[in-house]
Image (cartoon, rainbow, N blue to C red):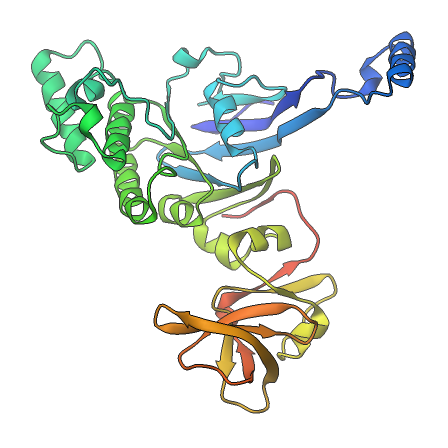
Length: 369
C-alpha cells in the first residue's frame, strides 16, 4: 500500500519480546511440530512465551502536529516510540516518513531526534556547548553562538550558556536537552516521558514550555506519557494505548467527552459505572450494552428529597471541601465533594457534563477528529 500521508505514519507496527520468534505453529513443518511436541511431553515444558509489546498499531503525526501516546506503565508506549525511532526491531509493520518507507533506515539517517527521561546531556560540556552539539556544523562561530542564545531563550534559560550542566536542576537539564533536540532541526521529535522524573508542580510549569518550544519551532512530535494532565495540555491528538493495542485516537476534548468504551473511560478516571438499571434511578435511560461512567465531579449532593438517597460510609476534609464516600444501591461505592460535613445519608444527582455513556464491551480502534 502506498502511503499518501506527509509526516509520520506507523502502519500496523508490532514489537514482540520473548524467546520464540515464530508467531504461529503453522509456519513449522509436520516433522518440526512432532519433534517439538515430543520434547515438550518429555520435559513438561510449555512452548516459548512470545509477548507482543506493541500489537499492530497504526498511527500518524502530521507536519506541525503534536500527538501524545497515553498509557499506563507496561502499555507498550515506549516500545512504540523506540520502534519508530529505529531503536527497536519491528516484528511486523512499516514506518513511513513523507511517503518514504524508513523501516530499514538506520537510526542516524531517519532525521528524528529522541528526548529521553534523563536528557542524556554531556556532563563535561557547558550548557551552551551541549546545545551547540546539535547545530549544523556548517554554521560560523558567530552564527552558532546566536543560535545557542536563541534556543536557550526559547526554553526560558537565557544567560545559562556558560554554566556546567552538572550545576543544573532536573527541570533546567531537561530544558537544555529539549533545546539541543530542536536545535538540530529534526524532522520529528520523539519524547519518552521527558518530565516524569520531576515533581508535579515543576511538571505543570514545564509542560507549557515544551509545548510552546515545539509549536514555535514548527517541529512535529510524538510525546509518550502516562500522565493525563501532560497529554491533555500538550497534544493536538491523544492516542490511548492499552496492553500494546491502540484503543482510541482523538483530540483531547473529544477523548474526554466521548471515550470509545469502558476501558478508555476507566483509564481516564471515570467510574464507577452504572448499568441501565442503576442509571434509571437517576432518571437516565441507557440502551442495552451501555454503561454510564461517573466522572470525578459527576456525582453531586442534592437538596431535593425525591432524589436518590445513599448512605455515607466515610468522609474527611479535603482542600477546603469534604470528600465523601457513599454506597450506591448496587453495592458499589462512589466519591463526591460537599461544601459542608455530611449527615448519615445524602441525596444524590448527576452532573451530565461530567458523565459519559460508553459501550460496556471494548472496541479496537476508534479514531475521531
